[in-house]
Image 1 (cartoon, rainbow, N blue to C red):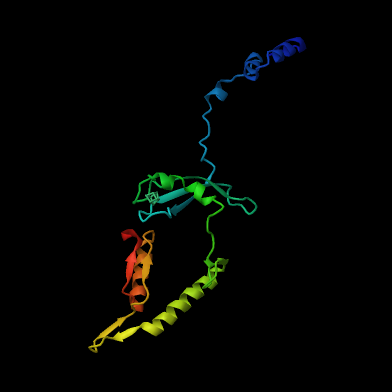
Image 2: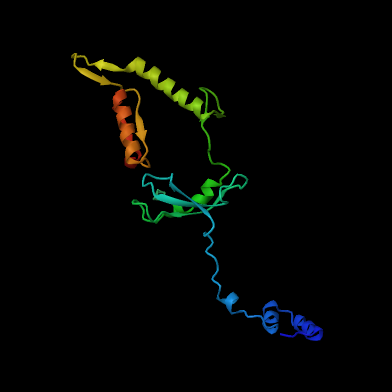
Length: 195
Ligand code: SF4
């Protein structure tokens, strides 16, 4: 197409980009036929479990970035996992709003400890938290474990500590939790799903 300077200026004067392109003779059919990219197409997917209630619905979390070293990931969309046997892709309104929970400035991201008599919580490491829990459990069991009852029968029970298991655990984690807790002699053992 031969566009003279005068004609070019006239075309530009029309102002609208799309009509200018057409007037210049460029084919727009392909551009018009292009489908808008799905907004999640380039996100990274991570599977997880809703932390709110004992139903424990499966999630797919979509985040920005390709997890390259210098790319900062940020979760921007969460939806139900269609392959999860519990919820088959559905989420209740609470689970559907999880992205706000994740970015909340009040979200607890690490263990905290409040000393007896103190009005303040202080941050501790995971190692410290596990060590403290183990220490308290060991001390309490040493003090209160009962090998035999008053009649002399073997009972091997520990009644002063209880345990609540998470319903979001897998079958394998649930099995191991049960074995560990029962082997310690704990009788007060329940699951979040019944609460
Ligand atoms: S999505 Fe709703 S029903 Fe499912 S686990 Fe979360 S809070 Fe419970």
